[in-house]
Length: 404
Image (cartoon, rainbow, N blue to C red; front, side, top):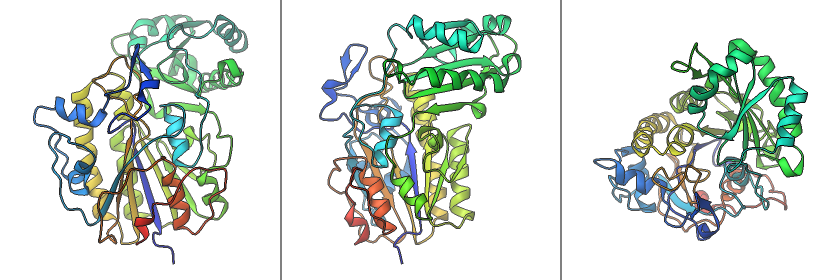
């Protein structure tokens, strides 16, 4: 019998725990990322530190001097910090590496000057819509600035961020979801050109009547991501008959590659509710892979450390529920895909190590482990648990202590 029947991987999107050794090669608003530490700096901004009793009991304080936490014995959980090998600090690079993929060339970004005129003209010709915006912007602020114009002219609001992403916003009732999705499919095709190859094209529908009440419909967001260039650990699981159940934007990040089942979410709370439902009521053998994006999208990029801290505290309470309902042969892993220090320069992600927090009721000797060399140790460990061979072209080494 395999040690764990069900493995739940919960990605607390952007909850980094300290800058990487190569952080001097990654920049935010002209400053390198040396000194960034998402969780530490959030904890220091919270008036009384972070109130995270569940994560504290799991051993989070072994990974840093986070205000509000304390070192404790945690026999049911192993903890480690993990570094990223891939060249990047974005969502796709981080998640792909978890499943074994080594990204050596970073995806294109267009933060400083927007997208090239040639790309925009081609998008207008192929979609039949005028493009407005074309700059790096907050998704909520650009609706206040250009939403009324978009509604009036049935144009497309095109914008980007510090990520490798082309986002298109359009009113759900004026332009329509199907038309917005069609335009995004065209943008994805255009952005397959090497010089324009962004990691994701995202449809951003919104509703409302004017700039004061426009609101994004997050449940109808649709990501068109690049497909990994090699089969991942998820493909190996699926090809061998194991479940690969995804919650949140995981399926979008992998373009459905290796995904057997997916559930969209509208918030972190919704994502954790769906995860808890899986823990409580669904009998499967394999992986449940979860992304909780609001840490990153709502608080990290918006440089809101207090909001971020409260979001972590809410997650902590829901994580306790997931653990409570877990079974003896379940493994619950909490990790992250990069940092996004809300106290740092600019609005970009930060090049940081991430936590590996691994809990099972079957563990008796949990402790702090040595730092891992790659996020891919996660995928390698999952494959080893199910007695599957890791392809030679994938990264990762098994965390052997979990099988003591």
